[in-house]
Image (cartoon, rainbow, N blue to C red; front, top):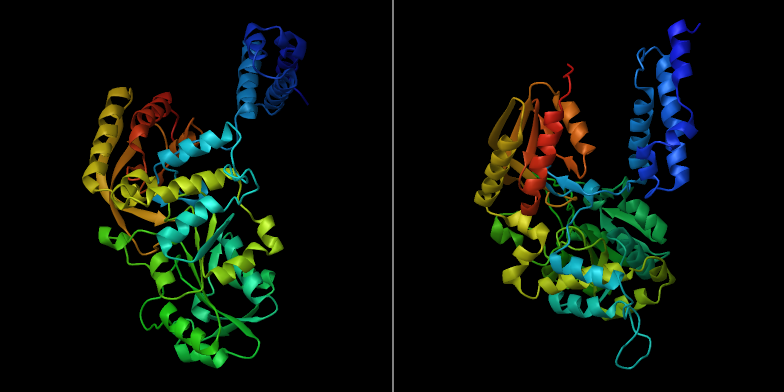
Length: 475
């Protein structure tokens, strides 16, 4: 049974019409639809009513102010975009959950230009006739990779699906057991092959597959030899992988095309900068692969896209496949990818201009400078006792790329006496912009490799505001 105090408190709850007359709400109505405001006020009143009935509130001297404050919070939550800006302090350069590659400044400017006006997506301005949306990126891709032709679709899974469906629908595709990878989101190469209509033929063992295994697997129904680069994991020890060159030799002898799915393909030799040696797109094309597929938003550093390069004969067949229409790229992808590819024409500047490559190859001294700058700014803003320490650590490439790579980095660790570290992480994820970092060894850890130089001041202010607000720590 409700106590007399509860009944009194419930009677004090204001009506929606009363709250609507308040100056704070009137100001809110200038920028927010009335229906959203009314709904938020009702939900605010209901929330406080439930708290009273549950015995969580027993003193409502300022009932109206509480209702208004909660209503304003609810309005802000409803009107805030779900897709928000995030400061990546996790140290994972290609963080899939945070959107992978950042676009270069030129790519951002190009996307902005085509998003704010009409563009010549499918018109040849010289002739006035219909053109191809792929032409701007195809010319750059063939120039940079040495391939005869190119095609771009909306992601690499679609590229693999389109290639297999075009080259081997209803036919057999031979692939090593050790290359039947899961490509993310629980999707696996065998499942993609099944959807394409191709018939999977596994050969070899998980750790060893020899050229003879492919040769023995070939039948009159074989249409394709498939090589899948295991970009998101490594098998070490007693291993043997058949190379693309070896597959090409078999393909030429048996008159079969060879396809190589590189996954996280790249155009710059990152081994020169201390990263693990990986097969580049140019090397794979030069090895004779008929079709090469890779992602646009991983090591390339561009927008999400599935890039297909290779022999013109096979690319032309894909272009007329009806599936190409379903997985085609839009004008934003064309603009961003073209601008990204143009950066590669000048290899001296590409590492500086493309954020992904800059973060992967950046000198640790520059990272240390950012760490010290953040520490200094934070100390000047903090009003509570906080333990700050700069330590060394390792960053990750991420995005299913270079799984064994460890990038040396500097990390600013934070320990606040009156805020539990898990609570601090939640509060910072809910900040504007959100901050995503590590929680390790009982401390909040900010990896400065992935924090952009222009974000330091903003990050310091967000950290200080959150920490200064305080919260009782829980065990």
